[in-house]
Image (cartoon, rainbow, N blue to C red; front, side, top):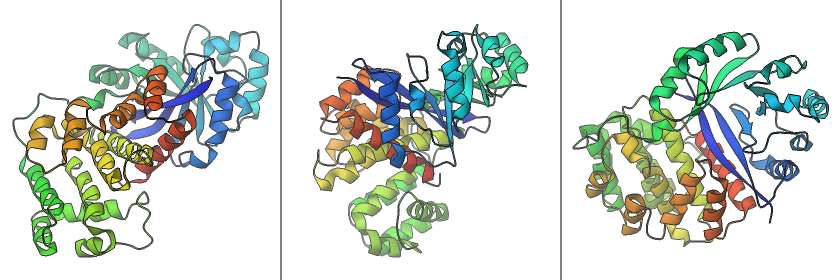
Length: 391
């Protein structure tokens, strides 16, 4: 059966922040670009808000006029190979592109000159970090600068990311920050330990005054907690003014979910914002796809599992060391330590959609009984959620 699954990747700028989100289309079971266009059209109500650019990559199949049967939102940037402008149907593609409201990114290849002379306007110039050496990247970034903003793709490690920035590109699509930048620390720092103390108090339903007292030992914790709860992603109709107010409105179970995010804020890594965005997207995705698959009382546990899945990178401490200090359900620990237990398959899917293997995404979604439509809608909602949280 033809299906289209979507994976995601962030574009990180020079300030180590997410400049844009990149969506990759995986056409499985004989799906075509026309199927991809129909899939994208069905996601109109879930498309990320226009504050942030969305790059669209057609995966292993070159973009052609079939994809442009879809009317892209204004914040869409379509990636195009130079070879598409040398293909037999190039005239039809160019005509459709000129009618499209989306911006374009030209992936530099041996046909780049043909594309640049086609009369098509490009906003971005895409450079393949695996195809060109650092010296070649620098030369190409300078040569293509008059035609568009330089961005790099296929950036797999920290050194390659730095090479791209040194070459003059403005951002790079990468996941290197998911791995800890240094050797794991032997213990949590005092700030991290304090957050865990507060979390454990909440999970044990301690008296509100005791939790407030623990929060007051670090004023920034209260500030961050209230900022999260009052973010657009949370969707409350009234502003939460204090921790006691939060307990009244949310209750301990929901508050535990949001306090869990504080642990991730203790990161000192330069890539903390991108890491937090990843943790939030995983958390919300797991929570959404869990609907109807686990008991309603376990939705928050799925969220916490996703949020905590990035703790090794965020805290620089081994996962087993972090979990030793926390009062977490066994089901969460099983998923975090070995992707096992009832939550393991949900975490596997959340991680799979950060990769380049569409068949793996389809297989993992199938194991959970999810259709491509259900998965893609959940992914878009999770991405929007992460984008709207104040990190």
